[in-house]
Length: 131
Image 1: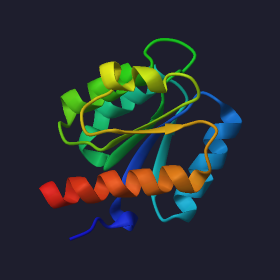
Image 2: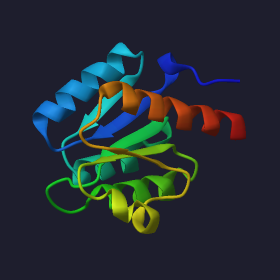
Image 3: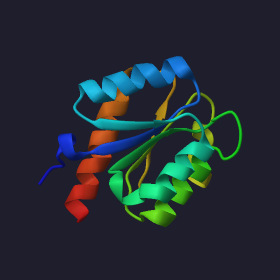
């Protein structure tokens, strides 16, 4: 069994406007519905309002303030223990083992949008197999 991309709503958290627009477009072109958050607080507010609506989370680690992407993912997992998580970062990949949530994926910047699409698709497939 595999996930249904058309039914997959991703929460994408990125503070860089150009990066957010580029990856958001690529995710939509790949068939995902995307809700974007500009910072960690906005992401947590959206998660707390409608955690069950999201099929996956793609978050930058460094969001220009608090909370950071590590905290966003931890809160997301408190609300939905099986939510697939993909982190993207340019300089924090070495912290993933100690700060990342279990069963998550890390994609290092710079990346091609296809790398993130493959990463989220793979964790969604694994999540679907477990349920």
